[in-house]
Length: 265
Ligand SMILES: NC(=O)c1ccc[n+]([C@@H]2O[C@H](COP(=O)([O-])OP(=O)(O)OC[C@H]3O[C@@H](n4cnc5c(N)ncnc54)[C@H](O)[C@@H]3O)[C@@H](O)[C@H]2O)c1
Image 1: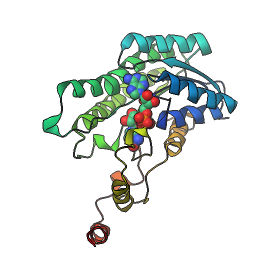
Image 2: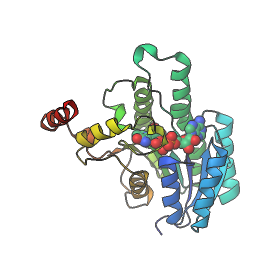
Image 3: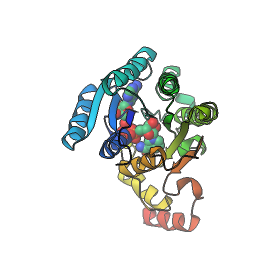
């Protein structure tokens, strides 16, 4: 039990990567607060974790609304007494080309991905500092922050902001024993990608990625656990890429040629 007696808030944990993180943390003994905008799905996920013996509660929250995020933090303390770990996981994507990105869509993605992280970080870190026992804040970034891509300008810009904020928070909060880090997951099989992962895209990714496949959410959760488990006590302000080699590797032109040959047959 690597998280015995710990309390974790995981935003966006009703499904996908957040659900896998909440599930894994609960299996490791943490009490988990699921903060998600989708109340029925969050309830379903909590029931699954509870049936597995986990301690879990839910709070309906739109992370883009500061008062709701503060209520999430208060509810966690009322329910479980403390906060040791905050995972800023809730996120949405926009896949419009640069010239077609509407201001309201740009704003919404920033409100959720960036402002949501900011509200939760400040509210949770204040409680951690007051308690004086340190803690972990883990943000969900993306390799897109550092790799240019088509139709990702808005999403990538939010993830770039997440990376910068992670480093600055890490520097300021380290003296309080709060370790702030981020995970940048590669392509992961979740709802956010359900329409994007067509058979053709999946096949292209299998050729492109050194590991030859996309990730399962549990593989990202395993990295999250490693970071907050206490074993990595000297890691501060890092962006950990869990991406199957995506960001480490240029296009393999030999493989690409083979792929195009098979597609053109
Ligand atoms: N799946 C990937 O390939 C991938 C890759 C890199 C980074 N990420 C990041 O990982 C995180 C989780 O992504 P995922 O793939 O599990 O997505 P997902 O769409 O499967 O799940 C997102 C969860 O966030 C919740 N949510 C959305 N808006 C919210 C809001 N305003 N307030 C509270 N909850 C909200 C949803 O209800 C859902 O439960 C995101 O930050 C995403 O950007 C995902």
